[in-house]
Image 1 (tube, rainbow, N blue to C red):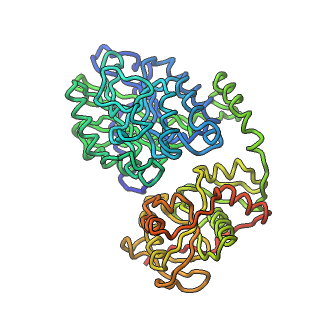
Image 2: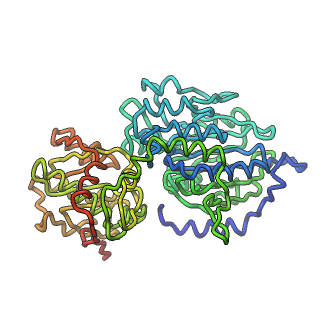
Image 3: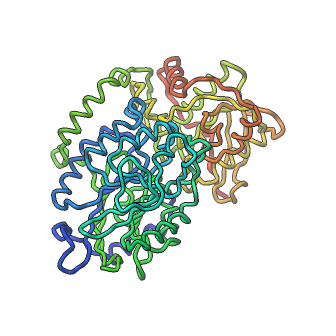
Amino acid sequence: MKRSGILVVLVIIMVTATSFIPKKNALAIEKDGFLHLSILHTNDVHAHLENIPYLHTAIKEIREKDGELLLLDAGDVFSGTLYFNQYLGQADAEFMNKIGYNAMTLGNHEFDKGSKVLAAFIEALSFPVVSSNVEAWDDRYLAPLMRKGIPDRAEGGSIYPAIMQSVKGVKVGIIGLTTEDTAFLSKPGDTIVFRNAEEKAMEEVAHLKGKGVNHIIVLSHLGLSRDKRLAQKVKGIDIIIGGHSHSKLTTPLVYNLQTEPTLIVQANEYGMSLGEVQAVFSDAGVLTSWNGRLIDVLAKDEEGKGVYRPDPWALKRLSQLKKPIEDLKGTVIGFTNVPLNGDRHAVRTTETNLGNLITDAMLEEANQFAPTQVAFQNGGGIRRSIDAGEITLDEILEVLPFGNSLVTLNLSGEEILQALEHSVAKVDEESGQFLQVSGLSFHFDPTRAVGERVSNVKVQGERLDRAKSYRVAVNAFLADGGDGFNVFRDAKENGRITELYLNLYEVISGYLTKHSPVSLKVEGRISEESS
C-alpha cells in the first residue's frame, strides 16, 4: 500500500466530522425521509475458503439486524490456495451464492487461468458481475456473458458495466472497475481490452444519473492510490469499495467533505475481515453521515474462543471439499531451520531469505539445461511466509499459487540494468514488480529519479558488462511482460527464450528435497542506499 500523509489527515477528518449510526436506525427509510444504507464488503479473498465459515456467520448476524443490506465484493476471488488449484473457482462461487452476494467486480487474478475458466465461474454465479472498463466482446467464452447498458433488473451469471439495486425502495447504482494492468498482471489474452477506469466511471455515473439514480457505489479493483484519484476526479460517486492493494482500512477515507462526500473503504485480504459501512443519504443522494469498520471474523475472546462460530453449513461443505486434496496438502517435501520471510511488504521492497531460496532454486534448475548466470522472481508472485520446521507441498503452492513455469531468456547487460531499474521504480508503492534475485547483487537509491536508481550491479561477483550476453532464469509471467517488464517480453518475442516446461512449485520442491534442511539468510544481494 502506498504510504501517504493524506491517510493520517483523512482519518482525523473522519473521526471529527462523522458520527456513528446505531444499527437500530438502519432498518428502514426512517421517518426523517433519508435513506439509511448498510453495506457489507469483501475483497482479495484469493480462494482462502478456510475463513469462509466465519465470514458467513458474521454476515448472517448483521443481516438479522438489517435484512436489506448490500453484500458486495471488489474482486480477486481467484488464485492463492489449493482450493483454487482443485476447483478453479467453482467452490468459491458456491459459497458466494449461498451467502447471497448482490454483485462483484473482476479482479486481475480472475484472468489467471484464461477466459474459459473465468466464464465457467461467472456462469455459476447467482448474482451479476460489474466491470465497466473490461471489453470482452471478441472473446469466445466471455462475449456471451457480456451485456450492454444498465438493466432495470440484472441477472446472475452476466457481466454488466453497471447495475441498479432497489434498497428500501430506493435505486442504488453499482459500477465495476478493473485495473488496466490486468493486461500484463495476468493472462487475459489478446481478445480482452481494458479501458481507462476513470473515463469509464464518468460514463457510467452519467448513465445512472440519467436513469434518476443518485446513490452510487463503485466496486474498484484498482488499488488504494488509484481509488484516491478516482474520488477526486470523478464526481457523483458516494462510496468506493476497493480492492487490489489489500489495504486494511479500519475506518473510511473521506474526500470532498465540504461538497458531496466520497468514502473509500477496503477490507484487507483473504476473507479474514468483513467490511461494514453504514451511510445516511439525503433525498438528493448526498451523504450526510456515515460509519465504517472492519470486523475481524477470526477474532478470539479473552478465553481464546472464536468470537464468530463457524457457520455449520459452510463448515460441513468445506470439509467435503477438503477430501480430494487433503493427502496432497500434507506431503512433506523439505525442512527449514529458520523462518522463510514471504511477508507482502518485505518481498516487494527488499531482499528476503525466501526470495533467495526461490531464485536459487530457479538458477540451479536452469543450470541443469545450460549455463545460467542470473535468476529473477517478482515479489508480487510470492504470497506467504513459511515457518521453521517441515515444509509441505501445500505451503509451496500457497507461496507460489499462480501456476508459473520456468523459462530462460538471453539478455544483454544493458537489458538486465533496465529490468533492475523497473524493479525499483515503484518501491515506495510496494509494487509486485520488485525483483528477488540470485547470481546478482546491486544497490539502489529510492530518493533518485526513476531510471537512475540502480548502481554497483554485479553478476556472479563480477561487475555487470552492459554489452555482454547473459542467460537469465525467470518465470513465464515475467517473460510475457508481466508487471510491466517489457524488456523481458521483447527478448521473448525476438526468440531469445528457452522453455523448460517445469512448474515453479516443482522446481522449488525438488530443490528442497535435495538441499534440506535449509538455513537461508539475507546476504546483501539487494542494498538500499539513500543519498
